[in-house]
Image 1 (cartoon, rainbow, N blue to C red):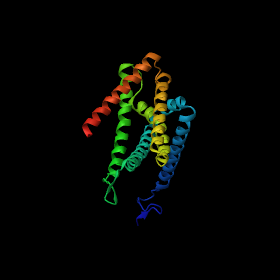
Image 2: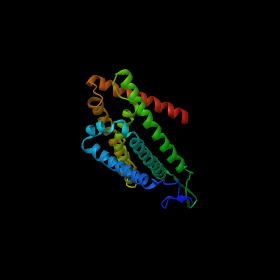
Image 3: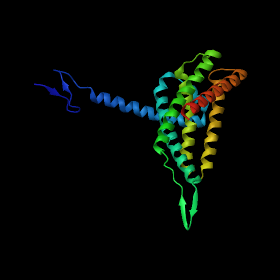
Image 4: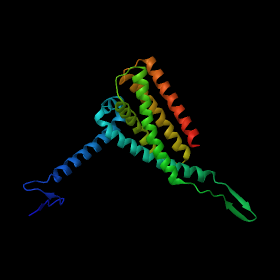
Length: 231
């Protein structure tokens, strides 16, 4: 007579014991550990950024880094959608015909803005990590791999994530407040990248300057090409 697991319903062979509960327990532990790691990463980036990035750059954090980039990109897409809406409402024109006021209206594809913002953010994080890896490993001969570079970039995205979350609230106060918050996060991101190049990648002052400038120039060029392609 066939036997079935009382928990998951899987058919069991004679004498077989189902391991579904063990798998479920392991998954719960992994999820809990990932959440704790993510919380510690966010806290660490504001208390001890270099030490935190140095620990997080290890290859076993790559999956969590991908999750963090995905979360940040979703929030970025949402922010761009709300920013577009706020800019449109701030600049919408009103004109008068006779005794009637008419508000000009344009159908803004807000969901499309969200999707484009989401995908663009994800792609650029991966490209930024690739540029960081190639510039430092091939030109300055730093011994690290792409996953290390991506983990560093994803750790830096914590500043973007927090800034964008605050900016979403700031949009309802003033669009300019939101823009200022994003600008501050960008400066923090750049400062920590410089510090990481010196302390984690072990570059001297001159090479750190050259590395950062070269990475920024390449990313600016890629951004320019992307604008030309999708314009």
